[in-house]
Image (tube, rainbow, N blue to C red):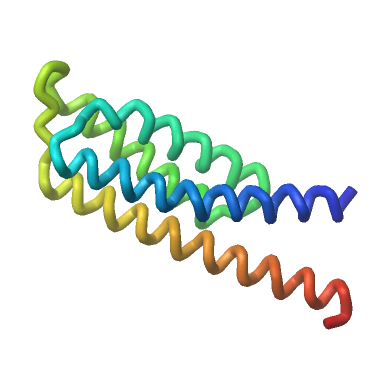
Length: 121
């Protein structure tokens, strides 16, 4: 059972690594004025937040939570027809995404190291 859970955690990290790249693209679209990406951005960050917490990747979960809260704040603050994104909020979102990617890499390294130790490598 532990082996299966470890495999699922590794799959989550691989998927989240890819999603961090997708998030970057979404943030760039947002920076270019495409506010239609906000609901999708909210969905991705919320999913990462919950799944990371489930697997015990607390720092990843916290980064995703911060992004989710920031996206919600942007959506709440902005006018429905013309979402005016404050540059400061966009910069914070970019910083959170970068930290998320770093935390995913760190967790993947720790997971690989633990797997190697378990195999006696």
